[in-house]
Length: 554
Image 1 (cartoon, one colour):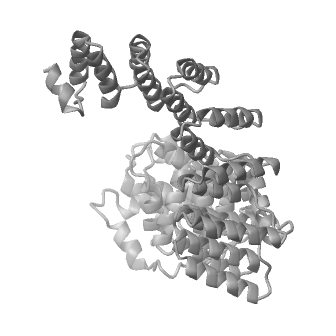
Image 2 (cartoon, rainbow, N blue to C red; image 1 turned 180 degrees about the vertical axis):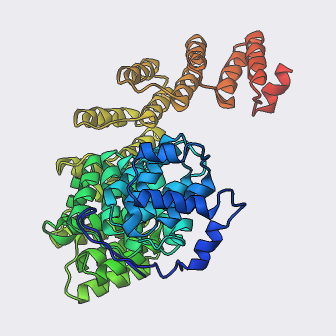
């Protein structure tokens, strides 16, 4: 496969070569010239070309060809007659002259002209025409119109793959990077691979436009095409990490694996593989990791740790353990990242004793557990109903300067509320909020439900107003917990008040909300109000779950 790198778009000379996947011949030229009905004679084409070669200016051309009607076929024939590098400036002069004659150049004549300019090393003129053409194509539903036309005319003009690099760079310059990347993929289907300069240009513009996910996608694609990064590539990807707010996270992760700071290229490549694994694309991630190892783009200890992590993600703990043992045999040290991966897997399977043993083993080796280590243990212990262990780990975690993740705290608080220890859960939330913890609707809904079981109406309402104060507008779950809680306490007036607020905020109550209200109204003997709520419910397309109340209402 032909691959070139063009560090300078202006000063680097071009080689006249034909891409191996695109064969050009005079038969192609002849076919192109005679495609359709010929409306202008060879004499007219020759006369125009001869006049241009004699150096006639535009005024002279206008007088000489005053009655000439330009059309697509005539323009294409003239350009093809002037396709050699020695005639390239004349071809460009004709292109602009015909435009001044109010001839609207189509995509095909633009592409022919661009190829001619590239062949003659007139790079800046080619760039200008490419940008002009792309601006004209904005909004065109056929996003591959330009690239397909360039591919087609590549067979006619003995051009250079540089034209496709310039095309993608022009897309990047015009901030049309999504189409630019699609075009890149389209070109590869036809056997063309972009230069590193083009990939760097695309990545740089994308990350500056705060489109980090696309930047990572392009970087991954680039590596799959065996185009390897340079300093400029890595600098752009580090900038993308900074804008995502994930650079420190990756640095910390690598510190846990390697024990000391890693180079920027290792940080970027580790982040890419980790992202792929986190997306659940384990096999592609492992394949990319092996390629990086062969090219010394990632450290061995990092690679081993990521392979363990990948095996764990696949649920293959035995295989993961074998990789870990091989890692140790090869002289690499155990690290807290690998231990945390195993602890997370054991907690997910509720194998809490084994997770606890690993934590103890980890600490005995002098490895420090970190936030994720404790979060796995919090969630695992809470799901297994081991509340005291959960609280113990939470206390230890906070003493070490870590704050539980939202999902871990919600799991723990939900368990406490279900065993009617809501006061303890609320106290923990208060302490965490002081440490910068950000609660969500699930957090408050769990606590509201917990207080509802104890008929603590004031505490429920305090939590509701706290949500409003923190600009955490209650959603479906929050209102449902509050209304059902008020119903359980027999406070129907307050419950209906919040039902109306809920509906006023375009939140549609579910069946269980209406059923809670209808049930209590029936128990209090207010069948009329129960019937009104039932009719309101039916009008929304909902049905009562309890057939007893449904029959009574009908």
